[in-house]
Image (cartoon, rainbow, N blue to C red; front, top):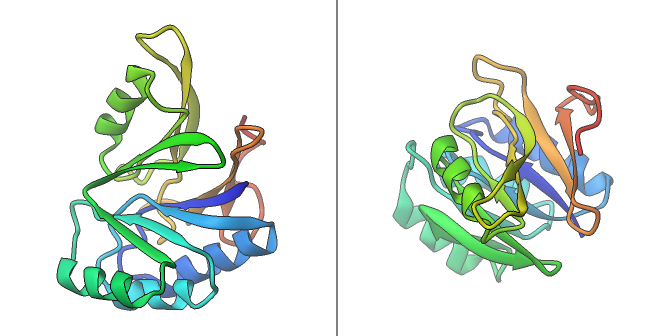
Length: 178
């Protein structure tokens, strides 16, 4: 299963829609949004592309009640998890959180195959050693909105556990990361 991993879209609906559209064209089957969405108006154009979206908020929440209403009306396409999410996709245990230091701490537990975070607007993909002696992938897609950083997102392949950092123009933002 391929997934689009985004964060920090803030109120940039066009950037979020473009990332989801590019990911869908590359075979993404779901979107993982690591927070700082701001409001439903930012999400609606991306939701219209038909992929299921797993969303957490962040420190820039916006209207939580409106997000709950949109999730209820989305016929299952939007899953609004609140401050963090514990999900399973393609047999992988995934944890979503906004704060990058919290994400690193959760990766260190060894309870997750993949931890996705945001907040710093600095994209990175790395393997983190856990206290259980196994590695967990930590993915921060940066800011899809391009706020004080390039507009980036990550294409993930959960079967192969490979992650590629992308810029909105569709070109890799850096050499292939795995």
